[in-house]
Structures are given as structure tokens and as C-alpha cells.
Image (cartoon, rainbow, N blue to C red; front, side, top):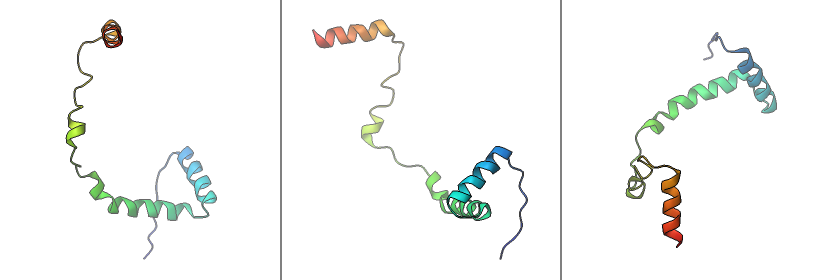
Length: 80
């Protein structure tokens, strides 16, 4: 069953949406409808994903009070 819906949307967003709809040969209403239905299907995508041990090992790798001179010292020691 279809139901009317009135939205207040920025005019630039409406213009962009209409151009997209025209290019994809769909109505703007059907694009909005598809998007709203997609929101219901992707709720499981917001659940936490376990972080691999390899990625965990990188946490904090760039932390610290280092500056360019520290980096240059690192390169010097690495390449001598």
C-alpha cells in the first residue's frame, strides 16, 4: 500500500536527486523508498566487528611526542 509523505529537503539535494533519478530511469520517490527500505536491512551492519590481532598490534604505533628530527634520526640509524 502506498502512502504519501511530505519532506523538507534542501533544494540542491532535490536537484541532485532528480538528476540521479532521471539518469537511472527511476522516480525520485522510488529512490527514496529503496533507501528507506535499505536502512531496515542494514541495521546488522552497525554491530561491532571483531578486530584481528594483527590490527590490534598496530594500535598506538603512531602515539608519542615525536617530531621531524626524531624521524630524521630514525632514518639515519636505519640507513647507515
